[in-house]
Length: 615
Image (cartoon, rainbow, N blue to C red):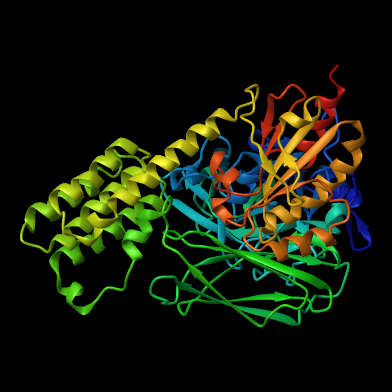
């Protein structure tokens, strides 16, 4: 990180600070008129500068800063949960309940204030790109009289990714009270620049005393970073810091790829599918802005023609298996993907959304009751109420539906039991109770359509449980359970054959945006340490050999061996090691013991260097 002084037009921050802190009024201001810097440091995930080192991963201004005539204390960043950051730092999210993780990335609760104010001013940003307009966090004002108000922080409204990647087209912010106040250098491997955002939030009850402020994640893709916060009353005489000038003209992408996503069984359009793209722009692999399909199953990915050499994306929706797509060279104007119903995860949503509701079902008391029950469950899950105790009333509702409608069609009643089973399997992670409910469907409704699928579901549950055991076994210090396969060139591949070396087993795919974004780091680390005993074994989850070969030929420095069997997510090694999300890596030491999993970027380089340095 560089400690760079912010320039406010022709007036430096130092001068503004002198005006603000030395005082130019004939009388001291009242306590309520003086801006109050809030101490958010207790929520910091990392400090920008410590006694040991300067953090280079998040370049920013540091120390006391004055922006728009207000003081800010910039010392680090607090990071709220975001799915991509969680996967990047911690590992795959195996179940929906894990998205509400409050251990690794807890919400920031109880920032003391103790005064009334007109406006809350924050320096902030986010990590990773997000769907335009998506609320990624809520700032909750807790008043002393018990009133609570939430102020949404939206991607593209108040903040964007702190890194401006080559794949980002739009940089403007929809909120007129937000702006970019600082720009700096980015990560060379991504050819990016960095930026910091400042937003002013109006307090709807300025005469009430605010006891505390909470910063709460909405558990979407992007993580929210809070850097500094100051509360103040309005002052028309405060100087206004101009927005940091753009370091390039606004980008206008002229290429479009139209996506259509449908159900593989019925071919009906699927709305609200998350399409996550990655692209090679200016010879740099980066993630791009995600989009969601509309009610007609359609979405559009925009890209710069002439500068983009490949496009990849994954498409996912609860209740369906994720599907990937990639293309090098000329990009088609339209792409159609068909998602298959889920077999391991998301079955709750699939049970709910497997087919449209017919007119007859709208009048069926069980179907109506089930629809109402599911809506209640969804609301509670969104609010973080995901335990058996918090959903006890809804669980009883399933039983009541069956008890009150004994003469209903077996198919309908079986669907009720199935949804209850999916809650236990997917939300509570109570495998035994969920499996017992599936068995009950076979016993009580043997002729139903659901009963015919129970054996397959049970087999998938057993497979998933086995995968969890395998993942749990991949713990630091454990001996890596080896494999014996052949590479793309037909050569034997195993970790044992590389005994004495530090080995990275890297699960990836050409259609995986985050995988391609990490490739420059892996290539750089491989180039730096290969001569000292560092090896990489790639495990490709692609299904098209020609696309994989074409991609590998273009990658300078990606010379390590690859295992490929064309089975996608059913790749033999992915199944063996319980891989449910990529990129996924396992770093193994010279003695065959696991050093760590899902290490990336600087963390991976440090771990490799340390392992090679050991005698």
